[in-house]
Length: 300
Image 1 (cartoon, helix red, strand yellow):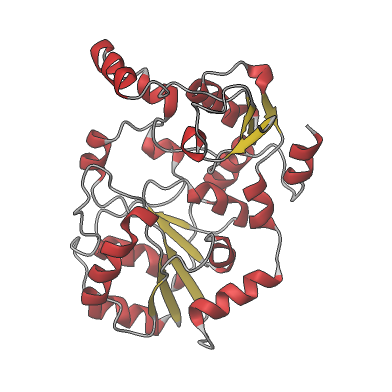
Image 2: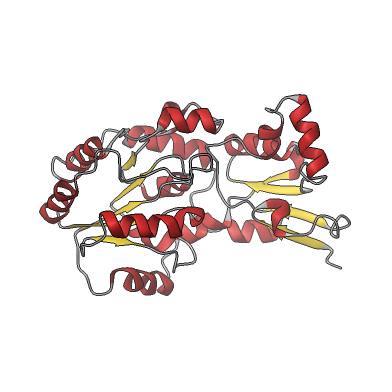
């Protein structure tokens, strides 16, 4: 019955069999993505694989009528991944950007929910993405020395908060409890928060790997470390949409030992060698540097 439908994750949000007569507007749930998605991914498949996918799922090539983007640079990927014409992609900025740039009362409540009354000088936020093709991947097996980590957190008066991908949360909660979270300075954030922005805004450093959350964090102009522990295996399993080194303005860490050395550079030696790269990428991705994206979406 709806005339207009808004989605953030595409056809999975609705029933494409029953909504073909509606105007479908895709708001997206990321600014830009590391990985190929939608049509970019389907076009990567050989012909027989495409036919097989379409027989198994007749709506696999389902696409919206309109979408939004944050800049002409980001819009090119929206256009190709959704197979849309340029005039059907509005340069409004994304509502999620408003959530990053605005401080709210909910932010304080969320920080209290995760940290309680614990005081700290630095919040380190670790947000790895889901290994869809390697679901048993152990994030804590890559040279982690728990004693060294705890010693560093104490020395710098820091707290490490772990937020895994929703698909990985239950498994990693068990893994982390048996590995590193038996310490007050290491906290597992169990997706009790509706989104990560409250913590993201408080983070002194973001650690991620292939998650697009770092694009949101560019708005904070703070250091980012890319913990690409299994880079070769991940890139072989998931076709990346970018040159990894060119799109990631931060040091890379192949294991926990290197990761800790980068954290020491930032907190102890006050080194931040990627400010210029972050600013350059931010200027490409964001046409607007304000919290009025929701208003522009409504206007369009």
